[in-house]
Image 1 (tube, rainbow, N blue to C red):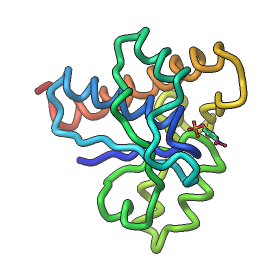
Image 2: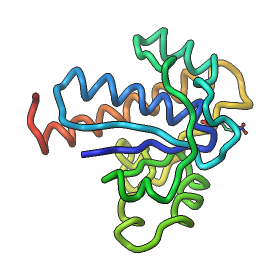
Image 3: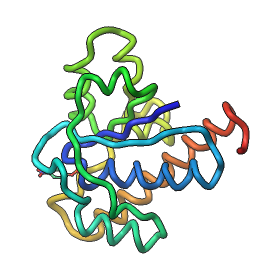
Image 4: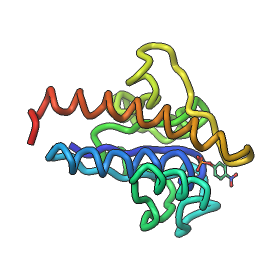
Length: 157
Ligand code: 4NP
């Protein structure tokens, strides 16, 4: 199973979702690979935003080594599930989908913790420090749910 986390810049929300899931699948011994990407190309090759790195580090989640990359159409072939952070990410990813099988892989991350509500992870980039804590809580809850679903599929490793 391969899971991709997607946001706009791939320097705030999706690297956090990526790092949290890498840690959680390792802790639970799940046979799952995780990666992340942005729909935009401004931050390709960059480390995550320093504020997101600081928030993640304070919770014991290392994301310093992750590097930004842009979502590409081949990601539909490489990944089984693609979680987007907001509706505009969803629209941008779906624009690249070639068929229904591609489209069916895509869902909002927060539909894991808030089924059917189409809630978005707000973009913290232009806001204050408190936005990063809020993003952490939302993404931590949703990825807990994802790990529970994966444990039901694979059992505890
Ligand atoms: P992210 O946040 O999508 O959570 O990585 C952003 C980072 C950078 C920009 C926008 C959103 N930007 O416009 O550069």
